[in-house]
Length: 310
Picture 1 (cartoon, rainbow, N blue to C red):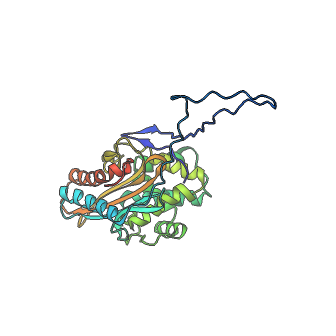
Picture 2: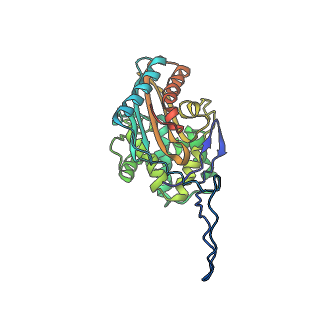
Picture 3: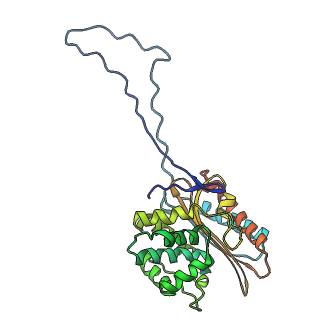
């Protein structure tokens, strides 16, 4: 896993650098000499070196009970705010290489603007993973950090439309991604939480480093207010204000409800990949919808911030 500098708290321009150092203590040896027999003075209390502290045990995957408890906590928190919400959740721990918890991880949900992760990947792939310059680069940054729909519209049509979904599925091995029925509505792409985990892992681990760094840096600079006026610091950034993150959010109203999604790479070194999708009942206001998703993430916050699950 490549180390990342991710935004911390509600200011996405702040970067974290984490360094780990180790030192070993070596007691001095006896002075050299072939004829010297001088006796060494006995150690006294306070001079005797303490033994080295044992190394901390490596992290272990969450037990089935821990996974179930976390899933129940998220579901209860979301539905306490907005009852009747359909939830899809996948939280992957890249240190233990295992799922931390999940709810309906293989069920398809509408992506809304989370789909822009596939658009930027296809744009960069078609360019041979070379970053664009000037205005083209700025537009990609704005599409990710400011969630600019107009940029997504142009790039969707310019780079293949629904073929973007199919190309991403082939490139990344996605098994639960379906293009929209209306080829003009990229936001109606459906994906599973497990596929979103795969997308972030691809961007961080398999995409050429320059391109991957560009994408994650833009996501780490996600603005508080999107270009359409929506407050996109719900979910991950609201529940984890002092934790590193790089996020892509999604929101929209559809015929049968409100879609609100929070996804991203979270934690020191990008340890966790999180995808929380919701379809909330028709008539739910965006304020309540945002509160529900943030409540769900708050149930995960102690674990994602570095404290073990109960």
